Length: 382
Image 1 (tube, helix red, strand yellow):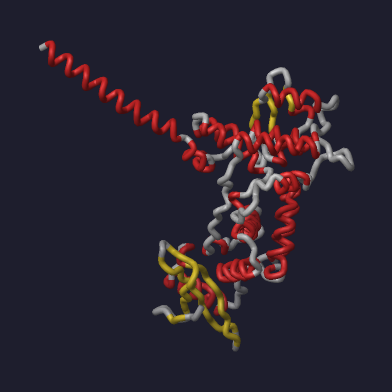
Image 2 (cartoon, rainbow, N blue to C red; image 1 turned 90 degrees about the horizontal axis):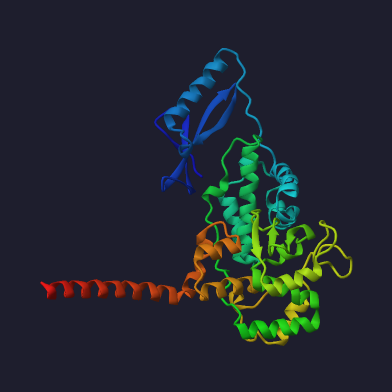
């Protein structure tokens, strides 16, 4: 950004091409003054932070006054390196985020470490992040992956500010996040679900039962992997989900078939996993490839290129919600069963409620006709 003189001596301004201040380009104010024979430049701050050319001039006057009286200028604390802030964040993530922060560790190593590690937090600009976004798209990464990488940088800055190790602003504020259109649209018909479950039963009884559980409770694969004996309440027919994706506890309710399956799996120890890795006997870390092979063998994804239309294990959860919508359950009920934080996440199922909408309109018409007939009868009597 090119420096431009202001009406105040030694005060310059730079107009940002990316940062905004009330929908207008943000302006940064710098001052310059001499310390002996050396010209010293100092950034004062942005207009969006409350700074102005007049305030910058006052700061410059204070600096010159101190120098004139032989006093030392206040030392400005150096901002930490991005690598230092990132490491503190990742240490925190190990204890506080889903899967012990392994996703954040991977994203940091793959996308953020190389371009930013040797820069200080105040040296990374919105333009740097825009360039990172451009480079990641050049590598044919999905919008979702790019957004996750940028979101991680935002989280690292936010924590650094919260923990008091950085006093500047988060540069991600000036960056437009990629738009993501990856919500599942396709769901299984009852016939397709029956055929898929029958195929899975031949391949693996455990895989069949996990798929059946997702299809009839809306549980995610990770939530099923995390289930322990203590989470299963066979008496009341309740599954307690405590390790959900959004860290919010919720309950799933057993159908008779689900209860029958879990009854055979419930271990003696409350800390023992319900479904176990066949090789090691511990927690399952990833879904078996047998599910994808079953989908491919049944040609459920034949000719489909749009990822939103392809059947995956997550489609079972989406099918559960879609079936509920088709039978007329309310968006509020579906949201609570899925564990959505907001109704906005569940609204994509609203188009599957045509009967409910039609019934509302017909009820309105019926009430109108009834009222009209009552008035007609009253007029006839008079």
